[in-house]
Image 1 (cartoon, protein in one colour):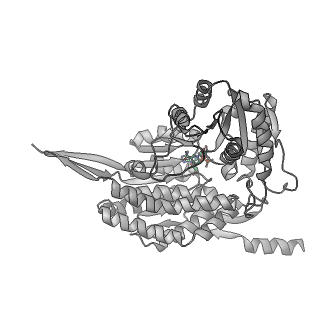
Image 2: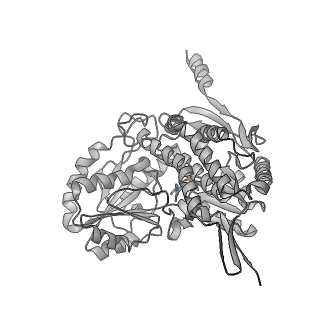
Length: 484
Ligand code: NAD
């Protein structure tokens, strides 16, 4: 019986042995094979053959050949390609959502939003492109914005569809050709996406996708002199290495890195709305979100009230099967990520923070997968490890403040500066507070997205911006021609 089950399971395991290079799926030269594990039960669901330096160099060469023509396309041609991509991806939103739930454990209701943002990235890039003057002149001077060349796009595992679509959309708008190295943990999601892009029938070589390890495929992209630009989403440590190693070939570099975003609850906030909203920000994407609001700053005068409201509101943050639309928090992506989050919960307890809800260990009945308990710590000091380091799991630190100035000081007392949230009834006051927070984006009274607004970080949260014209400009180089 056991043997039969093993055989049946083996039959269900998908295999991916190809990369997408020069307009076709080609067999991997690299031979290393990696298991893809389903986060809800720890079982192998796919085996992926990882690319090596030779696969990467083949993809770079294809992108370089394609750039000779694609780099000279007009705005109208690029706009047409973006529309083709948008159409092709729009048709498979359900499939893209389902594979994100399966491979990554993204909760279905959030996974769909991520996929839709990825789809919209192509439409938004077209709009941004139309608004961006690629040629300007005055007197006898003409300035044109030229595509920078072949770009290497290296991404994290936590919102694969959005990252790879957003970076590809901006690059295509700029006239760049690309080699994409998605996280190896997003191989199934990437495969469905590449099938969509393939249906869009872009000229061959414009985008190439090599699945593999960061230290192999990613490192080759960073090192290779035929790659002019790296656009990276991931951790600060890898971002630093890319900046350092990319300097040898003077790479243009965009880095989208981590965060420890504050949610500032002003003393006039309506708690029935503000507390559930703050929890949603903390636990979005099961806490595995760079922009998660993981520090909640609460006026001392309302601390007890907030604690009570939080205990009540936490009942809505159910943990479980991410495919279930009623579930708010799914598993962590991997055993490693599970252990990382658990170690931070332990550290918070050791450093003297008080667990209001949650705590260590699996939630009851969910021992098989990488599930953690959504955890709220109160009595947190901003210099504690759980308030300073990015945990990347559903762990919220609640910190008391004395005055508005104190709240702003605490909000900015971090090495990060990716996102911030301000919640209050007096919108003028909320705007005043928002204008003093050192973060690339500050949202007032809820989570808003605007794909024309820049996204990116102050301080250690990154270098450069994505989205809208800002994101397209990151793939462009100005050239001025001056006539006597
Ligand atoms: P990671 O830095 O470990 O990996 C990111 C990518 O870099 C992966 O594709 C990986 O294979 C590759 N890589 C690893 N070593 C490399 C090397 N030496 N050279 C080139 N590439 C290399 O990050 P992760 O664990 O996949 O993602 C989580 C991190 O990403 C968190 O810190 C999170 O905040 C950050 N993130 C930031 C944003 C943003 O927009 N700012 C969005 C999502 C995630």
